[in-house]
Every structure is written in structure tokens, then in C-alpha cells.
Length: 137
Image (cartoon, rainbow, N blue to C red; front, side):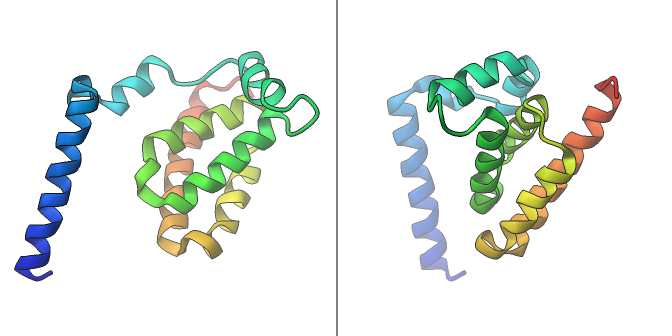
């Protein structure tokens, strides 16, 4: 990067941070990982109520909605890492298998690129490993 570009980029970051502080001063101290520990997943009934039946009673169930969300977050790349981990946990809670989740992520390599797909697969593997110790199966 050139010095001029680096300076412009830093100014954009600073302006974004200032705007975020102006909109919500508490955002400066927000820690997404701490939020994950406090609220790791929603119960299946709650997922189905909010994401399966509330949005569209005759449409997608919670599991399908979670898989679609994983696809969208995969394409976003590393921008949505904490949200992706949380959504993968929710998808498992809604009945998605690790194979289904991996297939969705793999399919998104075509749209989000291989680095985004690889990062999402690594995140998913971490969630699967963490879930193995806590699941009764």
C-alpha cells in the first residue's frame, strides 16, 4: 500500500469508529466473544418460533433458514466470524448436521471465494469440535 492510500484508509477507519461511538458509546467496549459465552445458542423451540414460524409460517423452517444464513455469512468472509459461529450452533440446535453445514459452506466457495469458504470451514470445524464434547450423541 502507498502512504497516501494507507493514510486515507486509516482516516476511513477512524471516521467509522467515531461514527459508531456517536451512535452508541457502549459499542466501543463491546466484546462479541463475551456475548457468545453469555448466549451460546437458543433452544430449538425458540429458534423454530422466531426463525421458522414467525417470519413465514408456510415457508422455510428454522433449520433451512439457519443454513441460508450460514451461506450468506460465508460469502461475507471474516467480517461475520462471531455471528457465523453462533449461527452454526443455532443450525445444529435446529437439526442441521455437520455434513449439511459443510456442504452449504463448500457451495459458497463459488460465490464468496476460496479464502472465505476456507475460513468458514475452519470456524465450523471449531464449532463441531466444541459441540462433540457437549452433545449426548
